[in-house]
Picture (tube, each protein chain N blue to C red):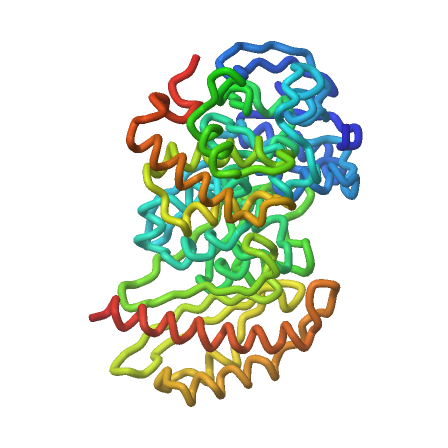
Length: 177
Length: 291
């Protein structure tokens, strides 16, 4: 049998980032995190441990939270990627971001983009998650500043606001181009 | 850029995967969910010449029921299984075990077959597969062979899957209505690998244990069936005295490793306590399910 897929060291990858279509030629060993930061300038996605432990690099792939340091950029081919830049803008924060600001859900902010993406997926799944569900989701993120109590409070606040429709916007990653 | 240089391909059929494995053999590494292999690449502890990505092979992602077994395609995501009503109904122990496996953000990519083929000695799924008596369907140049857990798991990070073979399906016997199961573990933080973990499945009839199966993780090179404990429990009532003796029996029969995370003594003690708790919980569920 002839091989249709020969191993290559470079490939063309096409996917959407925050609704915007992207087509790029990439080296196959580049991670999605590095592609986002270095090729696309989306430096909101932070890199901490780069081996899947800290959660700072978490983005949404087809609506599900994933470690972008553990995904090759070529594996995003055909997918929908949402980063923290797709959540809100400095002038129009997403309700989750507003809640984090109000409830002091961040201090240095390094871990925050990843946490925000996990929370976006959590609130898309469960309108009013229990504290245990919130804790389980946050368990995939290391924060060395806050002690998590304020983060938990921020998630509760975001959940309430979104459930009440006060934010006027649902979580991202759904129904975009 | 952290991973070492490799060549990458993403075939979309099993035939092509096998052809690629035939061509590159031990120089190639199969990429499933990537939640163990990608860290190894990023840390440059693994340096395969060729990476064969299984994520485009759609025929490896499914959950079906046939002949009293739940058949799970090797590339089925752990998160998909965790959310599966079918699995929660037929093999609730697997649902319980999955909740301990990494974090939700890991399980969205992590696969059932990937975790089992990686065979980390402290992972949850190998113990669940061992206690349930799962069968592992492996395809290769000579066709398909099906192995039980005790033949599939060889030692630390090593299974019976050969360099030209692919784990394609795991077959879990459905739990009967009178079976109760429980999965428990201790780890330093939620989501870490288990310092010690236990999967237990029991059947209780007239207040006595009619059947018990127990498998441990984190206390040896492979998942360990606690055969002495299973035999000890036969025909006994799962009361405080029995469970106390069970705890001592389990601890006495284990020779777990010491490492920076925990001493052998700690693991031995924790494993005994966990088995007693898991059997109690499984017996309660069995009695509720049977009534």
